[in-house]
Image 1: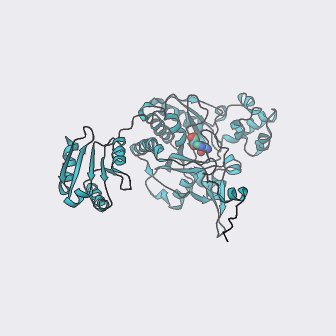
Image 2 (image 1 turned 135 degrees about the vertical axis):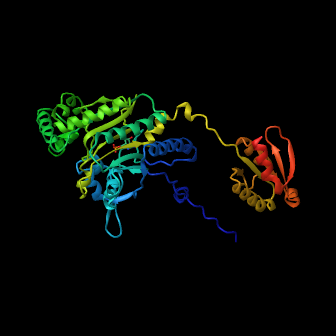
Length: 436
Ligand code: AMP
């Protein structure tokens, strides 16, 4: 009896095929082609950090949730809405870091770094996570470069230095038409005065629901509100610069004088407050023309160490959003022509040559000579095509006959001229030809 073929209903067939996975919303793969530009930007970051004597620090991607609740502040968007949190099997509540300043300070306090020569100048480069609404320039995983100057005095020089390092980095990676917006938000002495004036002002205005809720807890944040009801109200809000105590005024004046000295242009923005609780005195943001998304943001945070249970430790710093930088400079001609170091291409024909081919690659490595290969199953013509595409000046063709005779063919890819040389001499010969 012939077998009865049971038809799978169409609907079930479809159900069998799993859907392809996508990366999580707002989080992106950084594919190989993208790394050419990104690596260049990272290289400049490292050079600038080293020039200004910042040492590298890396902290874990996960931290205790409480670090951010206490450090960044409970009534901030980051902590209220944007943290990715998880509970470990042991019951610890951790967060994917939404910023790296609090972790750096945690590390400084944990390791008793105040015993080292002060201040500590630290830089970091790594991923940050925020559960924001994804859009251009706003992602759920992005990369921050940060410069932090921790310890020492609350010296305005350090505020200026973190701005200078950032500005020079941005210049060097070819960000054009920059504006540094800067303000001082005072200290424990003078800020309460300003808060009172601000609350008095806002109580008389029509504001959005969120702001009405924040008015008592964190009134400075009302100046950050982008809601269309609140935006025009901000224009008439009192300026904090009128409420600064004499010490904060003098501090701010000196920061500006240092910037003048090195020719960094800035514009005062008395409504710039920054959303996070840990800032005092200087705050700043750097923009490029045509975008209202900050490329870099920072300020002084003299109280953070105490907020984390540590000794009083003056500090100042900045975080730069690398994706925003990369998007800004992508079209610049400096990134259009990639100069490749030409690489020799090893072509093999047949299985036997694979083993010897592998050994030959090792010989090239010992001489620090880059070599490309396609030790897969491609045909001779496909491999030659690939060598031409990769703009290899020389191809080494290793066939069965050559493997048997311990020789190899050197092909000049420009004119197609081929010559057979002993295998033991090939590295030397290639070196000679590349030098010529
Ligand atoms: P903040 O910690 O919010 O001051 O951010 C510091 C810098 O990180 C900003 O100036 C931006 O360049 C960048 N940044 C902040 N949020 C995002 C985001 N969601 N996506 C990409 N970059 C961001």
